[in-house]
Image: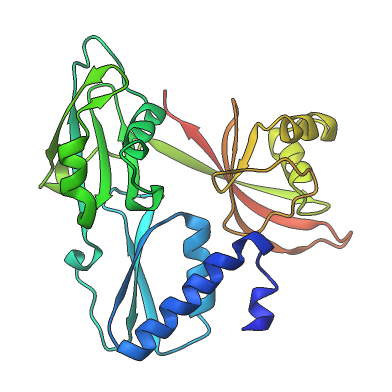
Length: 262
């Protein structure tokens, strides 16, 4: 286990301890454990830690197709997970879309202002006519009662029962291969965005770059597999995998780049 922890970052330590305690809980109770909504990096950590054991397995779901945030179920190998085990509710938001256009940050801000943690919410999907979001079943009624406005807009939320009514994912990740001299944030950013190292460093120190939803302003921050970068004004990049080294000791990198359909 110690050997495994070295691969993760210092600020991921509390989450790793949490995963280890979930593992113990499932081992001790011999019953499944459901997590809150986790981002892709967190799910990668869970899978890495639990991959060391044969007794436990994991499954994840987020209701939407290609959901970014998903709840995970950790369970003993005898157990057969069911859809209901994930305890998720999906709502649609009715609002006067002829007169106003709600955006993702507006919706997220309104949900967080209800006093709930981000981990209780899954993905938020927005298109021209509709807004839908996934929420943990245990807080769903609370959200339905208290989410009556977003900004100055009055809203009414309604449960969606049929999955065919869900907004489809219009995001397209395009895979690309690059060779980089290191996994430093500034190096990868410069390569992927095709800009100079200085420009990449200016974006980072100017607080325009997030790694896994956390602002990072250290140019030498080390990226790892499973990381998702968002650069203000330039979309998002996913570190899919490193594929060994070239003869000149450069790292072969597989990334995904998000191009949203406009």
